[in-house]
Length: 382
Image 1 (cartoon, helix red, strand yellow):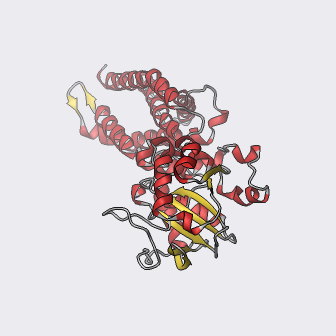
Image 2 (cartoon, helix red, strand yellow):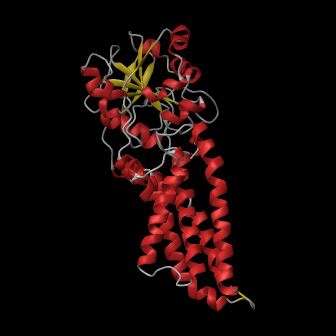
């Protein structure tokens, strides 16, 4: 789940992000967005606000059915890299020269979350060009960073629009922004706000003070569950490949390959492998804190092993001892591999930790699958 392809799920959270800049950038180069050249075909633009720097697009804080369908679509991994808004400055309500400026990424799921949560406020939203990547991932990649922030401030002529010199940034963007350099280059002070957009109002009401709760990243079962659809689609090719290979190998016998035998095993093989896929991608993330072991791969192995035991109790695995052993090696390995992919979505892991886990887990997974294949063939040959 690299940030570049949005496999990282930090952007799906209710994070505070900067809204669209007054001057979105076109493909041909930098260009300030005004009411005359703003993309008015975008449903979220409902008007414009006149300022000394020009007319600024005014956006709605109400999400419509197209926004919700778009959110569902990207959660299932469809055109995720293209789900973005134009960078620039946007107006919420009827802001003036004293109104707050919130900064966010141009990943539309993040953009929508922010505008929805500042309904009723009069504010400016500055959207950085993060290439359609959420704040957390973009901060790590540098696109939600010091240079881009300073650049957007200048492009939007923000100093002509507000008389204060304060920007509110999401805390998850802190790794990419050096506040002192922004101050030196633009004169604007960076104020890191809460992690979640839903805390913007409490943050303002607390005189722009961030409480401990506002700084805490919650990663409950629902937060984990809503991240699984993208993984489910992303890893489907692995599922299909394993099913096909298993069905073919199940037809190997002393005479060669029996397609009739392979076809006879197809349904059971598909069901069992699909269940182990589901166990690794969905069950393991949902049950994450309650499963033994620290490494995600081992957590997935435990869930896969439990699945194999349950299937064996319901006589859904082979009655042959070698066939049974083959399933007990294969199902946990599949579940383990798919669960390991969730490390890119979790707040529990680090890059170094993921690399260490892969060095340990991947050889075990490969060995398990190889041994499962050998036992499967041996079942029909011996």
